[in-house]
Length: 127
Image 1 (cartoon, rainbow, N blue to C red):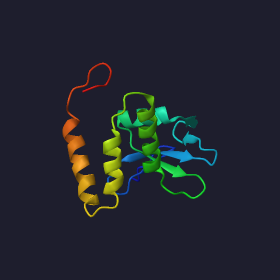
Image 2 (cartoon, rainbow, N blue to C red; image 1 turned 90 degrees about the vertical axis):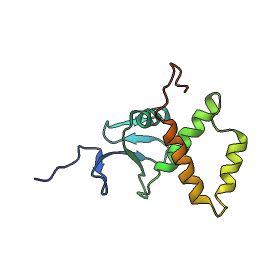
Image 3 (cartoon, one colour; image 1 turned 30 degrees about the vertical axis):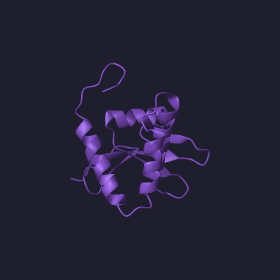
């Protein structure tokens, strides 16, 4: 018997996990196809924090815009208060895109953040 994903979702080909589909329309609005409503970047951030798997797909071209939207969530967070990413770190990241160690930098950052994940948070979300 074939298992079909619920409306507004798809199944990841590699993992078989259900992935929520968010459509980005030309008016720059994000539409959650599972909930059948528009959502904000704050709600996208909530999906990330909840561990919900999702993809953001351009309505016209069907291009995957997930990474671009996640960068927008980070930029929104950075603009709201005490930035996590210092100017020095941002400039180093930009330089890393052109350097020969680009892949190594990405892997190192992923491992470093994964190592921090188990640390407890206080009421304000700080570690």
